[in-house]
Length: 584
Image (cartoon, rainbow, N blue to C red; front, side, top):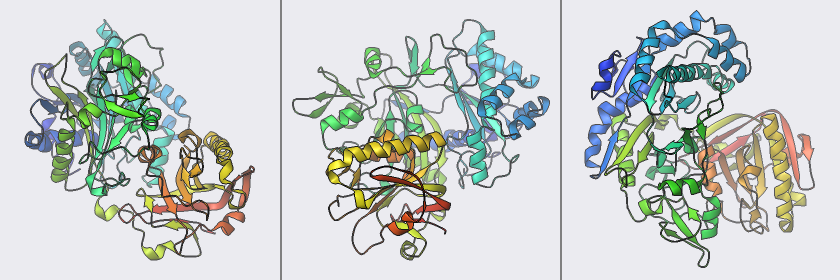
C-alpha cells in the first residue's frame, strides 16, 4: 500500500469511550503495527472517499464501517504470556492450534477496551486479521488468515464480551493454521517475520428475523486476467452475491460481469442454463441459537435459501424470473416463476446505481494507488427501510504491478521439457507444486461416451481431493459443455480439484475454448489456470512423455499419472500465453 503503516496512524487515536459519541471511524488498542488491512482502509478513508463524490450518484452513501484495531503488540504479548510459540510451531492440526489459543488469556491492557466496545455496540461484528504482510504489493495475503463474524446480540454484556474475546483468539490462532504456514513457506517468508493485528468492525447489513446480512456483497477488480467474451482485461470485472461476502471470496456461486458493460448478455446459451447456475443460498449471521464451537470460523454463520430472502423482501433489485415457455429470464420478481439471481433490475434497468459507484471506487482507488486494484464492498439498498443506499468500502488491496506480471515469451512455448503450451490461456500465475496429471486417453476417446468419461474424471477428482493433491486435467473439447458432442459434460464438482485445466483437440473434436458456459465463472473465482490447445502448427501436448510416467490409477478412458518431480505451470495474463513444463 502506498505509504507506510505510520503514514495514516494519526487516523487511529487511542481508544476511549468518547469514540462512540464522535463521528470518528477509526480507533486503536495498543501501540504496535496496525497491519496491511487496517492501513488499506485508512488509505481509503483519507485518499479515496473524498474523490467518490463526483462518481457516485445522489442516493448512495459510501463509507468505511467504524472499526477498532488491536495493534500487533497485543498479539506479541498474548503469545509470550501464554507460551504459545511451541504450539504454533510444532505442526499440530488446526483444531489443536485453535484449542490451545482458546485456553490463553488476552493481555489485561486490552480487556477493558473490548468490554467498553460491547457495552456500546449491539449489532454484529466482524473480527478480521490485519497482518503486516496482508495486502502487500509484492505478495498480498488475500484470504489466508481467519475472519470471524459474531452476532453480538446477547442480553448480557459479559456474554457479548466472552464471544468477542473468543473471536480475537481465533484470528490469532489462524496465523499458525497449516494453510497460512504453507503460504508463507511458499513465499520463503521466515516464521516470526509476520505481525498480526486484528480489526473489530461493524458488519454492513440488516436484521431479518434470525438472519443478518447485506443485500449485496461484491469484489471488483480494475484488471481481469479472465476477461468475459467480448471484453478486454483493462475493463476489469465485478462479482456480486446476495448476503455476506464469504460467497464471493470463497469461490461460491455468484454473478460476474464487466463493469463497463453491466447489461451485456451473460456467457451462457439459454435461460435454463442461467437458472441452473444461479446462487440458491447465501451466508448470513445467525441471530438465533448456534451450537457452541469457538474454534470454527463459521460458528455464527449459516446459509438460508433464496426463498427466505424473497420473504425478507431483499430480492427486489437483485433477482429476475425464469419463463420456461420462452426459455427467457426477465428482470424483476413481479411474476411467478423460479428466481435467477442475476442482479438484472440493478444492472439492466438501473433501479439502483450501484454499478456507477463500483466503477468510481475502482477508478479512484487505481488513481490514488497508482496500480491495478481489487476492492471488496457490501451494500444495504434503498427501499422500504431506508431512503439511500449504504455502500460499505470493506477492503482495498493492490494487484500485481506491471513489473510483477508473469511473463511467457513465444520461445518459451517450445522445448524438450514442455509438456503442453498455448497462446490461448486464461489466468496470471506460476504454479510449481503439482506432480499429478489426469488425462483422457486419446486412443480410447469416444465422443459418444463423454457422459461416461465425465463420471470417470469425477472419480479421479474425488480421490485426489481426499489426498489433498492438486492436479493438471487434460481432456478433449469443452469441459462442462451441455452438449456431449462438443466435449465432456462434467459438473464443476467433478473437476474442482484441478489447478490447471486443459482443453486439447482431436480431428473430430475442435470447438472453441470454453468461455461460453458458467464454468468460466468458476475458473474466475477459483483462480484455476486454463489452457486451450488447438490442433495446428502450434505447440501440442506431449502424449509420449505422459505415457512414460508412473500410473497411479486408470479406468477405461482416463489415466492418472504422477511425475517424479513437480511440474511448473506459467500463464502470462497479458499475452494469453502459457506453458506447463516437466523437469525430467
